[in-house]
Length: 500
Ligand code: AHR
Image (cartoon, rainbow, N blue to C red):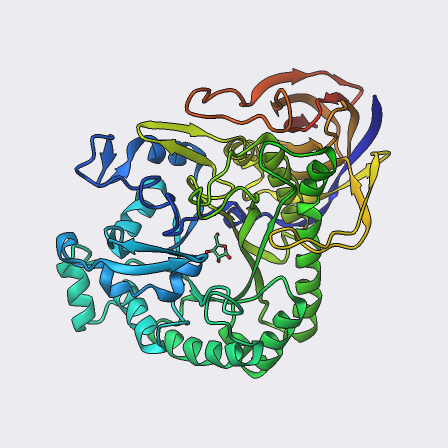
């Protein structure tokens, strides 16, 4: 058994971990919104205003700080007016996302989405249509949602049941405008951003706008540079990143470790964008990074499978690694949204008819909840096994990579109201790893760990076995301020430490 040590530097605060880093994404794609979240008021499946009660309850238990909607690629052909007014009079429209055409019934529109956000306590984040829309259309959506003046649109909102403003603070200006959002080149998008942002902020100065970035540093630099004289219009720059490593449940050892590189790729994306933003920013206006789509996209999550695949323990371990990265970048990262909340891609919840189950990724979100709003501190890992990783040249969604190394241990820590929260994941596919944890600047007195492990990296939950993978609580002994734990292969743990 290998042994490594983790020192939690409680005196080196990196930033406050915004709860919005634990945000979610619901797109009108596959069975995420329809069927997953929404079954409609007439469904025999218990629902509240059309939304499944079992899913609502699971989301309320977890806490959803922010929810991005309605896309994704779907957003750039979505026209918000089609989703308001009496549901039976809403048009059936042709929708497209990710190469898949579907009929959009518009039963979930702005009011339904706001009701969902209210119910689960989520901050709404609306993705605006740049590709097939206009600044006028998006300005009017902002006005419809947020204005208080006695305009026709505000009267219409009231007539549709919402006299009070909806106060939507976060607005995306286009989605993946470099591809499905209109195949713009960076400079053309940069011009569009300026135009849209100018007029949206005239409607509501208080909104925060997310410019469409990419994991391409070149696109990001061009968009930001071209907006240099108007950077006050840009509050956040988005990045999307997906990764894969073979079939969701049937993968080789090499593919397993390939999947585990996801967090390092995310780290590289943020590092590059941070350096670029630091170069262009002016004093007094910092641009946040909105990592507003991230997660595993297995090759078996295709149009034919409605973009669904089993959500495994190994995928959940990569989510833990991503949060460790997010915590380290808490000074720059302002929000993040996993793709997606129900059924699609790295879903937290999956449904099948009346059945609903939580995925290992849901459990990781719950186990990391202690870090939300806490102060991230630096962790020092020594002695962890490093695995040599080959170059990767494969088609999407596998990121292109140079040869490198992958640490078998990922960790992050934060100072909470009650003590110190430390999260650790063992990325070894088959080996247990012993870890000695020490706090620098404090002395640990008591430790309780929540542990997520399973009978293999491809372990997952399903309608037949909804609780095959789930966390369990353990008191961990503390000897002279040191915590020694054996981490099972492919596992995640969050240790809540009391200290003096
Ligand atoms: O999350 C699925 C899709 O991935 C989104 O629609 C798009 O933004 C991205 O390419």
